[in-house]
Length: 147
Image (cartoon, rainbow, N blue to C red; front, side, top):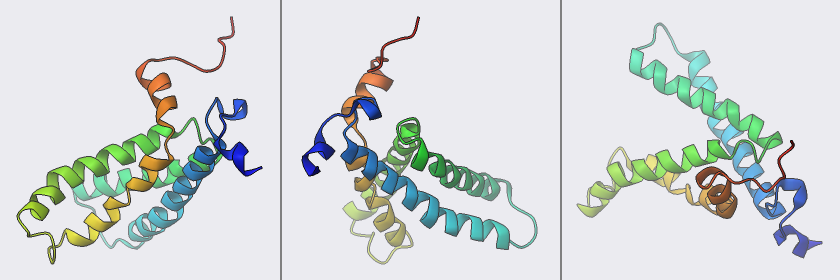
């Protein structure tokens, strides 16, 4: 039933199924959209790699590949979404906000990436913040410890 989507579920460690399905959608988008771009670039890259370029593309490749695990291990891979939220919000603050404030964002080389990174609102809405607070900040578990 639809209203059950918004009730905490013991099956998902007390997380609402709505959040689980929304996070799975985000993981799927990361895996397919980012993964397609990243792995296509890596496999088609001619010649050697610059050190920083290789690091950046390796991180993106690992990130997109780990998102595949998130589709199946949704709750356990929440840190991947937290990483995505943190780096995108930080980049928006450090890079986009100063350009926007000085009216230099439109027409800049940053504009397209800024739009893509503004979609960070989706994982922000998908993440079960109460669970994150309890589990990762306070270190509490919803499941009883096995002695």
